[in-house]
Length: 168
Length: 438
Image (cartoon, rainbow over all chains, first blue to last red; front, top):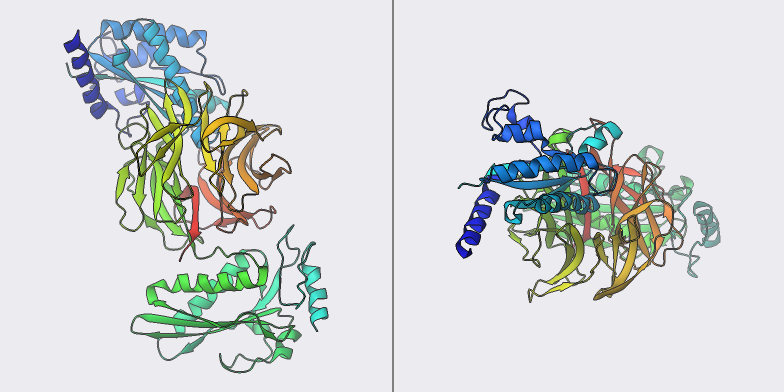
């Protein structure tokens, strides 16, 4: 038990160095070549591949204005994420919380942390070990959609589960 | 003569003109100036070879400082009746009165051995005498802009009775690239946008820098490790170090105490954000708020006894004041909308803030009890006010709308007049105005 915890901690430290560089934000489907199917993240048809996680299961959930409450749709995506993470135990995840541009920078950073944590808590409630999950917030710093109306804002109020190999 | 001057001056300000007994040239800044006070500034006299360019540049910066306040207006040299013959020549007051120059600023500049010497005098034209003694500044040629700002600060102070703010610097975030891949660097510049110097490279996301009260250090939030942490950078050496905060998943929103020895900041853990204080000398951490809501954007009162901050404990972001040691907080914002980024004024009487209401953002000020709220600006996105050293002007950033939207720096005086864009080479956000330099 003791050694297991230790191993998990080392893995966590490795993953921090490997997968959470500041330039890695909510890449998800974009990083896999948006449907190209075969890349570093594997084939979209392979259920054990990150590409499958990102695109078929869905790597992100969306939030209402100012909210960090999970919608029924979000919960259904997270059910899939939890199952996948349990089935593919070699992967770790960093959950990135984001906000739209309607808010001050520092408040949005805190709001993004709330959103990321809501996702983490849900995944943990479904059995994913908390040691495999980290959270970070980018606030309004990394918008995905750049127009200034609700069609974009709704895509930016998100939490993205970014998975990476734990190095096991 | 004095009476006539005062009568003229009274026309130039709204109310509450300081009618000093002796009647010197005096402009009291209250509700805002209707008509700027006219001044004449003949190009400073170059003394000896090699001083022409510096003299011309210096004169231009002094005039630009004064005009930029919105309180002064420069009379063009083409209107001058008597040509300016020399720094030591007697002043032909009648000729300056005739063109309604209320103030006359004269000077001379000498350059030798990499040093520049600036002498200047300020005249109250309608009283027919000097306002204060002549002053002389000596410094390196490279520092000529600072000498210009010092001359302008002196003129501003003598006429308004307020401290100046021209010889000061602003730390901000220089932004480049498209909206969905912005690169951000910390940068420092003079208050007027000149002399930009970068403190970090663009490889790491950085946000919200804050000057130390003495201007020697800057605190900011960095994603260097992949997670928000607080760094401190030494302005002179550009050496930087991470602040060891209390343990948490994210640390951000740092501000110095007035003595520069403590940092207050937000710490997030488990999705909850509270305000903490860390003593830079002892390394001791103290938790100042303990609520399930978001507490962030703290700002010390000038005497260091209180902290104004932002919290959504009521259900939406509002402003609160608590003791600097934590404990009970009282809400001060009660208008419509959401309030954030409170910043206590250097004079202690006002709190500047960002307000979001009905799809618009505003920069505003209110008294520390929440009364007399005044909104100074309005746009798609105005955010993050910072006070000039004398508490008379606010700088903030304004972001434009849409896919090509980008931020720029602006300043506005606390009457809501004189909104101006601060020129920057790149997009710019998150300004923090430093102290007057020594």
